[in-house]
Each structure stands twice: as C-alpha cells, then as structure tokens.
Image (cartoon, rainbow, N blue to C red):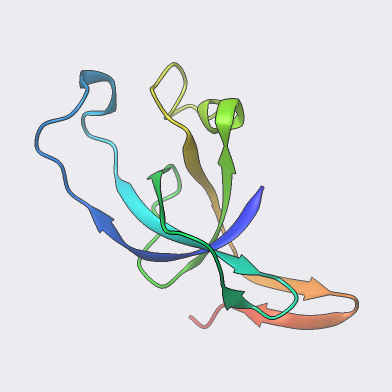
Length: 98
C-alpha cells in the first residue's frame, strides 16, 4: 500500500472495454517521513470517488484487482481509500480539511 496525493485526471474516450466507465486519476506517492511528494506520477483507477488534491491510499499489482469495481479488470493501481488523518509516532502528520 502507498500513500499518494491525487494530482489530476486522465480522460480517454477510447480504451479497453473492461475499463469503460471507470474514473482514472493521476497520483504521486508521498514520503511519510517528510510528507513531500516523491517518485513518478502513476495512473490509478478510482474506487472511492477521490478528488484532485486529496491524500489517498493506493494498492498495486494483483491487490489492485481485489475491489468490487476492479475485479477481473486490466488494472495495476487502484485508489482504495481517501485518507482523513495520519498519525506517525504519536504525532499527527496529516489531517484532511473539510
């Protein structure tokens, strides 16, 4: 599992039939020690109605196909949670502002 920030959307009018109707988002991993973005952008299937700027939990590989939305789909990365808060070593390092 990874913690990422949603950076944008991907729109594709022509795609594999099995992913028609699925929302595709661009996410970038976050280093939990510094809470800075790191690494490359990744396309993920959104299973929880996440939005741009939100902090999310993602899973990759075969785990990404274990949701009701992604089961038996050609998927290598899924967003499985929108994060409300993160506590690390007794300190709150992130809290979602509503």
